[in-house]
Length: 165
Image 1: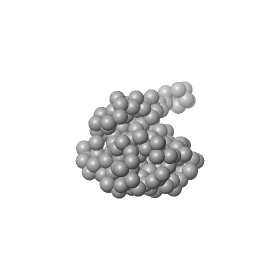
Image 2: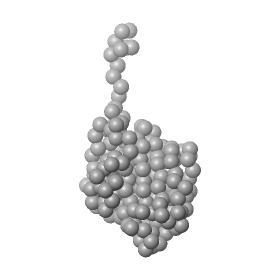
Image 3: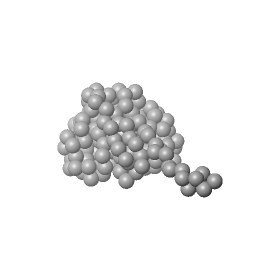
Image 4: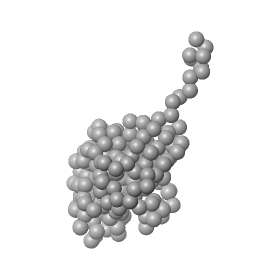
């Protein structure tokens, strides 16, 4: 009985992050914004999108959705918190060119549509359309394995394999 109560270790959890957009995969260090490239918000990856649809990279819950619809936060079923930030300096567009399809508190499955946006408008008006995907609660992460993929298909290709503590 003593072993049953005190000898049990917490089991590590694993999570696969699927591409939330279709496009060219870029190392986070290559994002032309130091907040992301210097990993000030966390570890991750980025995608240069080829269309204007963002889908959920995991099963989880919407925990944050900026009123400008340019960024969204998802908490996975394993507790990872993922930020998807469409483009750079897109907050200044004040929601123009973006349509949200979910709300804070919504449960989502990997591949569910979260945001659609006018890619050509973003390319014209924002600093860049490159989209960082970042794990914001790195204290929960034991390891991250980046998959060697160059062109991702939204909701289909896996980008990261993460083991939590």
